[in-house]
Image (cartoon, rainbow, N blue to C red; front, side, top):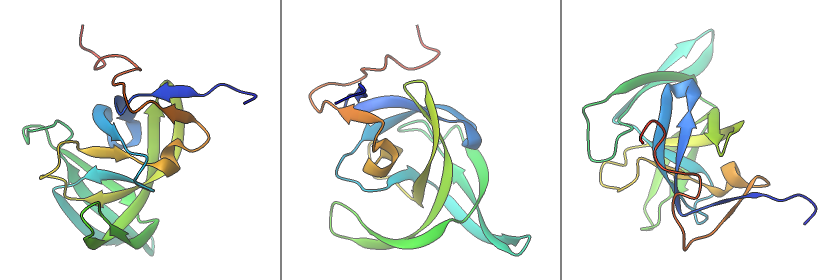
Length: 148
């Protein structure tokens, strides 16, 4: 390998600056093609003759105290099959990710993850060409930003 890649653990803190999320605990999921983020509501609307979504995020695990309301253009709608074999049609948006100091755009699907432990999955498409994963380790990028 000519250039070294950053190694991620199976869970890491990442940022989603375009969604006003400085730090969210992500499950690094090489089994998921596309990243997915928890939304507690999604409303579709039109802006400048384009399809947009307005949605709410609860970025803190096991808490709904912090609610962030976002808007983004719809990049796609696609059927996604979860690990339990259930298929759901989801909105897809593109947003900015910050992982290991690298900022880049990637797709993320919007879905209700209330019954899941992690509010965001970092999927293969958002990692491809940038990172490698050590599934035996966690927090290789450090502890939660802002916590000492």
